[in-house]
Length: 135
Image 1 (spheres, rainbow, N blue to C red):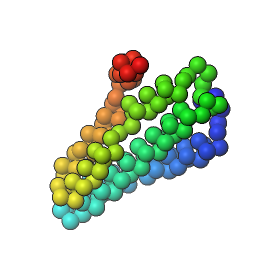
Image 2 (cartoon, rainbow, N blue to C red):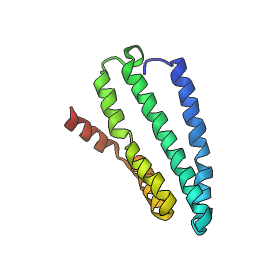
Image 3 (tube, rainbow, N blue to C red):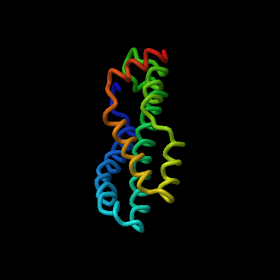
Image 4 (cartoon, helix red, strand yellow):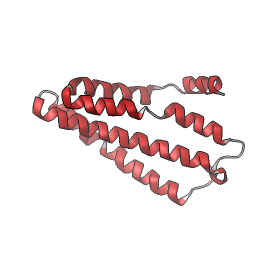
């Protein structure tokens, strides 16, 4: 980005708010994993928080991609949208995990853990390799 944009800064603050909230659903899952009655709600809460974070990051990337005035010079819209597409999760997968949290909450908890681990541990060289393949 070349400069700060009002909408982008506000959405970034919203992202920071949701990310700073993430430890609370994580603690709920840690405490409720042994209680069958509480784990469903905890996993749903955690999954909804991860989904909100993913949706906000995706929206931010698409916003920057669509506005040439705030993109860094030399970066095309297709390059930005390719990175966004590689980084954004499958919303259908989130829906499957959230629905499975109702019936098999422990399986959904491990699925959400896998989503979070991949998002954090995805090496930058893999993303750049995927971008070269897509382009």
